[in-house]
Length: 219
Image 1 (cartoon, helix red, strand yellow):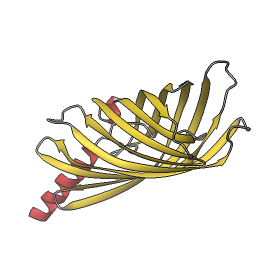
Image 2 (tube, helix red, strand yellow):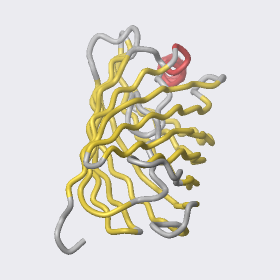
Image 3 (tube, one colour):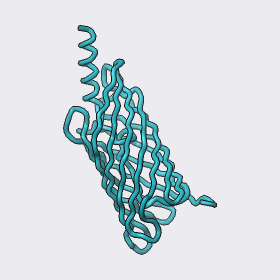
Image 4 (spheres, helix red, strand yellow):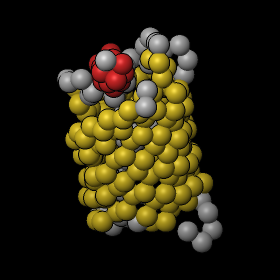
C-alpha cells in the first residue's frame, strides 16, 4: 500500500513538472548560420500557463569556429505556484552542414543537455534532466546595415523527471521558430518554442534577448 501511494504521488509530481525545452523556462535557441568568435547572450523567457507559467532569466556564452559552435548556459526559472526559483545548467553543440557567408540558406544539426535540481512542487521537489537533438534551417536576408536570420528548428526532447526515489522519461518532438538580428557587435534574438508537456497537451515558451559578439584572433 505504501509503495502504491509513493508511486501515485510520483506520477502526480511528474505531471506537474513544467515542460522543459532545454534550459528551464526557455526556448531551444539556435543559429543555423553559426559564426566565429565569442557571443555572450542575455535571455528572458515567458512560458505559457500550460508550460508552467512564471518567468525565466538566463545567460549563454557561445564560442564559434565557423561551422562548429559550442554553447554553455544557465537559466533561473520560477514557475507559477513554486516557492523558489530553480536554476538549470547545460551545454549545446551545433554543426553547420550547409551555408555560411556565400550561401543564403543555412542548415545545421544540434544536440544539447541541461539539468535542474530541487524544482519546488509544493509538498515535494523533483530533479529534471533534458536532452535535445535535431536540426534547423535559416535564411540570411540581405538587409542593408544589419543582418537578419529567421530560422525554424525541429528537435526531439527527452525529459527525465526524478522524484521520491522514482523516475520517468518522456520523449516528445518540439519546434522553434525565431530570428537573430545583428546590429554590428550588438544584436537581438527572439524565439517561440512549442512541445508536448507531461500529462498531455502542448506548451509554448516565448523568449527574447540581446547579445554581443567579440572577435577572437585566430578564429
